[in-house]
Length: 193
Picture (tube, rainbow, N blue to C red):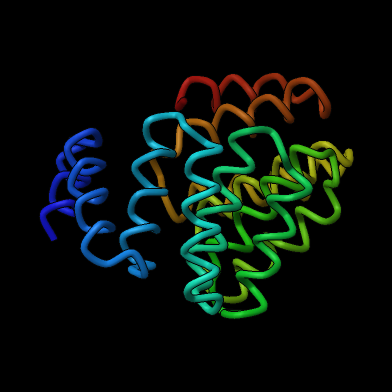
């Protein structure tokens, strides 16, 4: 618990020290390995985080969150295909884990698999139809596929859910200006952004 409090306070080195002690006491604590993975990821040690998440999964292979966390570390390293594999494993364990769909969608976007990304954002929206970020990211993917009106619709929906969504206003204005040549409407969005 002390390590978790230190993580909350962003005292990652203190949490790391506490977790190493905890693992000396109980070397089979998958929770300690999971938290150590969180700490190492926050410290920028992505391979160390991946190793600790892998150890946690060897102890408890049914924790969808740990697969998603390991995928996040892989994604930070630029290993998008392996990240997608882990997000898929997380979803296989917990099909309602919308965050894994969202993150898998962003990894697919990074690989320029915009259709795949849209599919994952659609899954997020099935679970949570009020997820402004999913609309926003789906709008970005649709823009990349030249589906400009659909992207504007997604940015608009994101703004309806979260009226202070600056990036959604900006991107909606960008599509209106650059692709639809509606400069007056674009200026209105840029002004709001």
